[in-house]
Every structure is written in structure tokens, then in C-alpha cells.
Image (cartoon, rainbow, N blue to C red; front, side, top):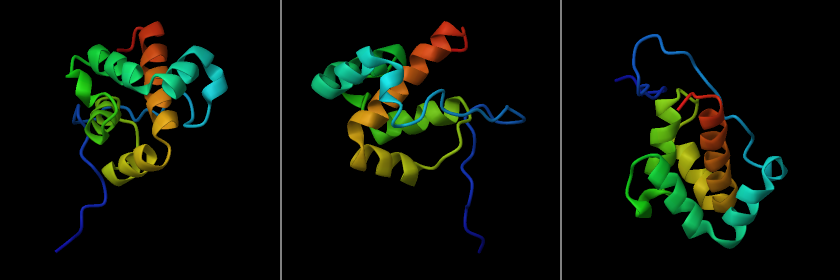
Length: 109
């Protein structure tokens, strides 16, 4: 029995591999998002969920981060998504929001 070592992509086929638009700890690249994530993480979670057409309660979840990552073919794993949200919840949330903002600006959403 062979273990699964890669996660299937959302778009399937030959979709290009992407990456996060900013690093997990690049808070200074968007201070508005950083301040919102630090002082109002539930509001930021709801903004993220709303922009992804999901339930407000899902914004800061592992499932949401994993869904976003697979949608844009960003390398990673569910385990990594879980660890990022467990250890650095505000940073991971802010990274997701910055990525959404940048992809919107590039008309890539």
C-alpha cells in the first residue's frame, strides 16, 4: 500500500502551481489587514468567508485555508494549514486576506 504524499488540486489537470502572494509573517506589507487581524480577528474571518462565498463562521478554519490553497494550486498540506492556524492564527488569517486582496487587484480571483 502506497501512502498519499501529494494532495489533489482543485482545478485538476495541468493547472499552474502558484504560491502565496505574501509570506506568513509579512504583516507590515498591509498594516490595515494586520491591525484588523490582531484586534478584530472575527471580523477579518467573516470578511474572508464572505469574499469566498462561505459561511461567516468558516473564515478562520483549516477547511477554508485548505480550500483557498487548493483553488489556487498553492503548495502545502492540510497538516501544514492546521499547524499554521494552531500556532500563528492571526498571521495565517492575515496572510489569507492579503492574498485575496492581491489576487483581486490582479483580477485573478
